[in-house]
Amino acid sequence: MPGDTERSRLFTRRAVMIGGAQMGLFALLAGRVYYLEVMEGEKYRTMAEDNRVNLRLLAPRRGQILDRFGTPLAVNQENFRVVLLPEQVDDIDELLNKVGSYIQITEQDKKRIERDLHNTNNLNAVLIKDNLTRDQMDMLAVRSVDLPGIDIDVGEVRTYPYTLATSHVLGYVGTASDQDLKNQSDDDDDDSRDELSIPGFRIGKSGIEKTYDNDLRGEA
Image 1 (tube, helix red, strand yellow):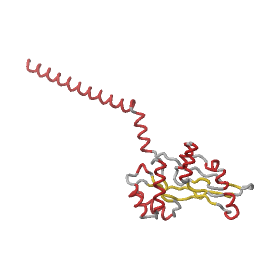
Image 2 (cartoon, rainbow, N blue to C red):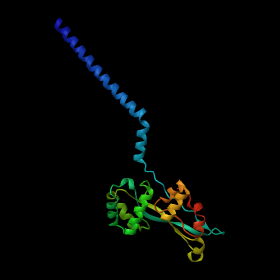
Image 3 (cartoon, rainbow, N blue to C red):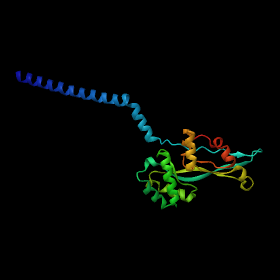
């Protein structure tokens, strides 16, 4: 009948239109997936990896100094410390004030932290305080959720078992001064400058520690 035929044609046209729209949306979705997975896949994989992994330089173990019989004269011992991750902090002064309510941070410490932040260009962790006790470390660890941008780290301190007998020969180590950084910059050694920016990294200041410093440092 004419009425039924007209309704059938109208239904068919609508079905075709709906089907075409569905196919168009599917093609658009497929194209978007292809763009994200294939064309931009490497970009988003890199972004995801950056969210999962935090890359930073770690200080190498400083080489031991032994006598001719193999007796250790200069060794390393564990040292608990708290470091600052600049890229995760909006207000560094506020964070230091919060940390200072749990451990002592002197004005001298703040000046050193400011200097280290300038030298590292906010790319590497910066030492806030070392030689923490176990109680201090546990206290900061428990409150780390309220202190975003800090990390509890285990470093090393240099010790000399026979200080009185060997100190004049072995010398000592210390953190890099402004002059040390300038001298390293004059040498134009990028790897060595990067090492000096590691929180708590120590270099030889005198004696054997200074003479053989490059060999004792290791590689970051």
